[in-house]
Image 1 (cartoon, rainbow, N blue to C red):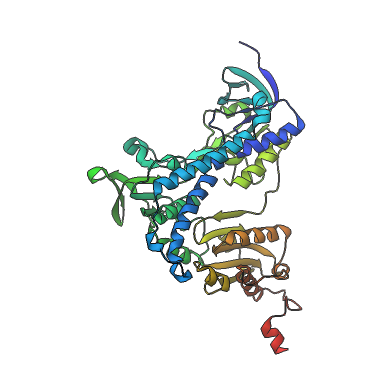
Image 2 (image 1 turned 90 degrees about the vertical axis):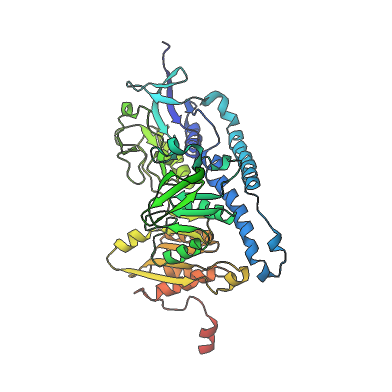
Amino acid sequence: MPGAERLDVAILGAGTAGLAARAEVAKRTDSYRVFDPGPLGTLCARTACMPSKAFLQSAHDFHRRHAFAGLGIDGAEGLSADPARVLAETRALRDDMVAGVIGGMAEWRAGHLVPHAARFEPDGTLVAGGQRFRPRASVIATGSRPVVPPGWRERFGDRILTSDDIFERQALPRRIAVMGLGPVGLELGQGLARLGLDVTGFDPGPTLGGLADPGLMPRLRDAIGAEMRLVPAEAEPEPGPEGAILMRWSGGTVEVDAVLVAMGRAPNLEGLGLDALGVRLEAGRVAGLGRGRLNPEGTRAYFAGDAGAGPALLHEAADAGRVAGHFAARAEDAVFERRVPLSIVFSQPQVALAGAGWDEIAAREGGIAIGAAAFDGAGRTRLQRAAGGAVRIYAARADGRLLGAALLGPEVEHLAHLLAHAIGRGDGVEDILRMPVYHPTHEEVLRRALRDARRSCQARPGALDAIRCEDAAAS
């Protein structure tokens, strides 16, 4: 048997995290290989972020016809959506983006990509495609797969869908159940409903789209419930009449033609031989990875992206990949401070969370100032004929320091970025209120929420953040 080739770094997986790790490793050494059996192109570009948002854009644009009459535009009743065409256009855009990712690999792919799955033997040797390697350090960025309950695919075949395969369909069924209403289930469920499908969404949890703030949850449920049936319960698929699938729960039944499973993703860690590296798995995940730590203590195995501790978001995967590559190339422990938590759901209304979440805020024993303001009736909302919603700001009562925010409304993705940046800077309510706010914009609603939070803070300003019309009139 041929001897093993020595490497400074082995990178398992050419997704977002693996590619980010490779870029950092290549700054330090040329002694590396990237192992991936394909298909190449990253999870984000091929099946997740990008195709889902392309699909949603078609659905949201078609739904916009309901506002045409109020805009003085005739002919909305003559518009129609072709779900099969939407899928085809989604795939075309997706394929172009995937080609761009693969094209970006051209300069290093020939000499460094091993197009095979890899696994570690008990002595730590890495084996892939009949080749053997001895890496000094390894970045594990093997991604994840959708969780599907045992037996569902065996019983119902290709009528069980996931976000990994729904965009490959040539057509969509008339009736569909969505199992799990986290960000993925909520986005795709609403998109399917807006294209004319009969959608029933199931989720027994207290949250929707990752939103937990009780001040916003009823609004979100009402908005989504107006477009698709929401069932706050678990359900089990059973064979139904005339080839249908019967979804049964404690409160009733509904017939569907397919089931979209959006019940989370599991890291692809099985069969890699990680115990040879001193890595221990617990419930299918790597043990010993605290927030910001990428390699279990005593090992030179660095976990990034969906294979690591998460969260499973592209910007987090890219950050973790860069950090993993940097420290793997130096054979040093990888511990770093993650960015301020930020998540966005591209439903309508949008859901956005920045900084500390509701569970963390609710667990604090007092000392929290909460400010709220609604988009309902706000100038920009009315001009756009947009759905309402609200902003909820969490601040420290003692000094007004911004801790987190939950937002539900039109285009709140931009407000969430602003707030995440402010939280990362350690800004207080007063700091943000000093920023100019143009009229009419959604930022005016944010300003009202900040002023509302300020009323509950002990550190009160010594001067107005700005002279408003009523202040000038009073003076």
